[in-house]
Length: 234
Image (cartoon, rainbow, N blue to C red):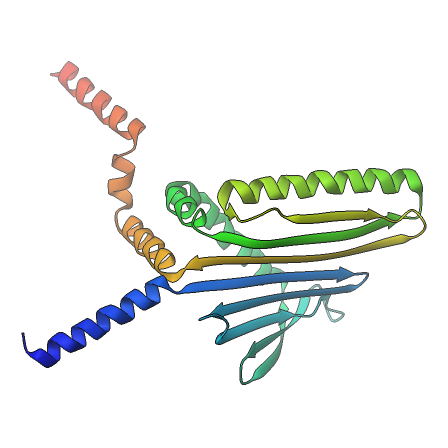
């Protein structure tokens, strides 16, 4: 192998290793205050040197028809782009149908997804809520229900992800007035190499669905039964 080709191969290998070891940080933040809903998703690479943010200021119903209108703002380090999108009921139904098809296939590659999710580290989890109905008894019941919901979500997150530290969760019941305010911040990290490996495994699975189906225990059992029936017929 020529010397220059060996150098190029070595540099390419270093680049691949660098990308595989690089951590991607995703910061999800949501704020609700009366009619104000703000969702923000930020992607960080190389300790924040590369930053990409998507903002969704609010979601509302379209006055011209039964549509959903939402505005989003994409923000990079050097520019900001704003756009407004409209989703019709037909488009929403089509998206739900596609999501249903995805869910039907989840059972087949859930082991790949779960293995990847366990390598996703949640390093920050803060969820604070102020709730009040204007009446003491119903406010207490609402706060208790909300505690149960938050506990279930945290249990789900700890089961499928790797939690670092303890989540910061608080509920403030306001017995004097009707109010609902909540702020949620979640920061998660994973290495790009783990995401690439999971993607390659999904591609491999999609190309060998038939082989995967035949390797299932009940499939082997059915095949064995069919073989036994054939012998009985003979």
